[in-house]
Amino acid sequence: MKVYLIGAGPGDAGLFTIKGRDALASADVVVYDALANDALLAYARPDAERIYVGKIAGNHALPQGEINALLVRKAKEGKTVARLKGGDPYIFGRGGEEAEELRAAGVPFEEIPGISSTIAAPAYAGIPLTHRDYASSVTIITGHENPDKPGSVHNWKALASSASTLVFVMGMKNLPDIARNLVDAGMDPETPAALVYRGTTPSQRSLVAPLGRLPQAAVDAGFTNPSVIVVGRVCTLRDSLGWFEQRPLFGRTVVVTRAREQASGLAARLEELGANVIQCPTIEIVPMKDYAPLDKAVADLADYQWLIFTSVNGVKYFWKRLEAAGRDARALGTCKVAAIGPATAEALRERGISPDLVPEKYMAEGVIAALQARGPVQGQRILLPRAAMAREILPEELRKAGARVDVIPAYETVPAAVRKDDVLAGLHDRTIDCVTFGSSSTVENFLSIFSAETLATSGARIAAIGPITAATLARRGLPCHIQPADYTIPALVEAVAKAFGN
Image 1 (cartoon, helix red, strand yellow):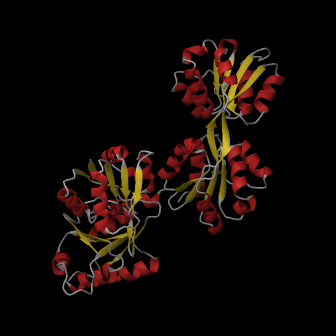
Image 2 (cartoon, rainbow, N blue to C red):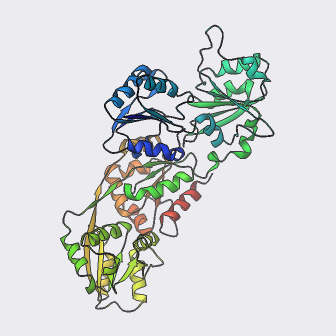
Image 3 (cartoon, rainbow, N blue to C red):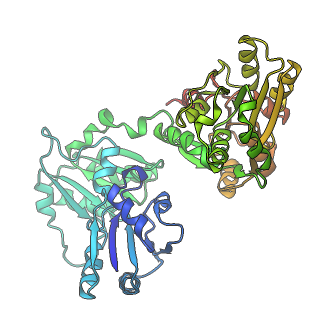
């Protein structure tokens, strides 16, 4: 029985703490807020109970008193509870109130701090809250106070005369009153001030304006909650120190259509460059229902001269059957190994195999040319574990050259449609900037979900990893706007960044 009050951070899932992740992974129950990044829920156990208690202005899923009672009740059922709160629980997060309720009920608890938006949002906008030339202290203030109530909990004169950087949270509704109160209390209306909207997320926007003109600037630029308000000379540093909004793909929305288990590397690279990534896997990688043919090939490995892998998935599922047979890399013996590209080659190296052949061109035609350059393949026996449905050019050309080729299915690709509605809305609204395709199968499956006309008229640029994928697009009447010279994920990311570079 224990409750962890966990700070989820300001929005960027990468800012979540290791201790918070570990506590979340141990929980039987996860009670989470609207401001907690949904990606963090992936750290929770699949069998953990998830309870949403988000509170947005005017729409509370559960009142605070009921949240407190819920935490106590779940803990007293003998469960470990993770209370996941946006930002830091003890900075305007009502975590202190929840902790008091737990203490009064005799429930053990632990507070795990998170990075507060009051610190992170300005930092991502290029505004250091302290700087030896500008400010040596920071004051964090709620902007949620009702300006119409008699008196104020704030000492506006003290705030206005302070040399501190002032940070107001939850204050956009009251921004005109905040600015007026500071100026009326003696602060120079020309004092630099800033707004940071949805700091640390792909939706972040920021602006700097004199305090006296900040409310109108906010209206003109369409700033709303959640925005952090910063007042002080440090705001002048935004233009020189801003980095987050200067990344080459910042503000761009990119759809990744690869299978989920393959998409993480591509998505992560695009996000590092600032893109808002929508992961919409159009295929799912699944095991074969019958592995008898592959198991027989594994047992007969000594009869093969070459083992050719055309994908990381081929390596993964082949090795599973190798291990199921109680064997390891030593079973390959004198059999030479080819990998169609660097990612596949790296997957082999992770398993203790250095490929004998990696072609210069990462496609089937490249493998054929590289093999033939090493000498005749006539009479050689070649094992090709791959997807159940794939291009036939590699085995066909090898057979034409006299090789005996066994094509054995190691896995299947089946259609998927994750986040279909989000992608469809983005295509119709023309808010998607780019759709990436990593294989011909992703093209075919994407177009089985969304029409070619919808994609063609969306204004989105289409990126293909290589000429085979581009040719598939062409057969479906679609252009390929972006294609890297090297047929790899890093090269695809670089090509997309170059096409959209800010």
